[in-house]
Image 1 (cartoon, rainbow, N blue to C red):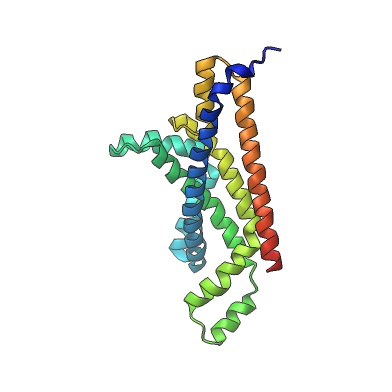
Image 2: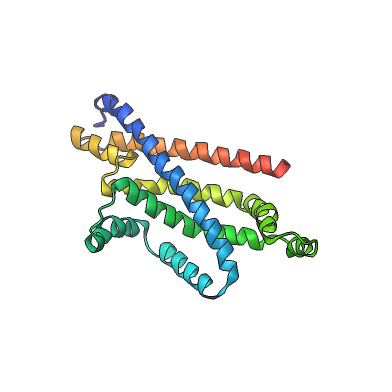
Length: 217
């Protein structure tokens, strides 16, 4: 077999350096996406034009490929506005918006799973809407949908590989650079595949630990 890992050894630290870029994008997008998703899921309960606009937003980001969204923002928007975002800004904006579209539906399901009797009892006792939202609704909703949120974050980590298209040096982009320098494809692809696998196994175990902790608290 024509496999020569010794040619790739010098590049392994460079490939591993892409983990930081990947996690930076994924974590920042997950935090911003979660905040937006929480706002959207709460606002959509009001109905009317607000609910319609939020639904249209969610349908767009759930109904179009992530690769298209990234290309449209990074290459299409500058043609209209003249503003040229950096690859990192483009990735952060699109991944945050895309993640918020999926997380808002997850959170909405979590909110709807809460016994309405608790909310009615709180109203009867004179508890303010703000306190009901942040002390009753949100904590229980998050507990109910934590596994789904962790699955979305794991998916987000894997999907960050598309940022190589806009030359952001994540794990996937670094593999392309190494392959171009060494004319070797199997070895660096195998290494980054193991990196992604290792990251997602770790994240899955973290999610299970959090789920067990919340279950017994």
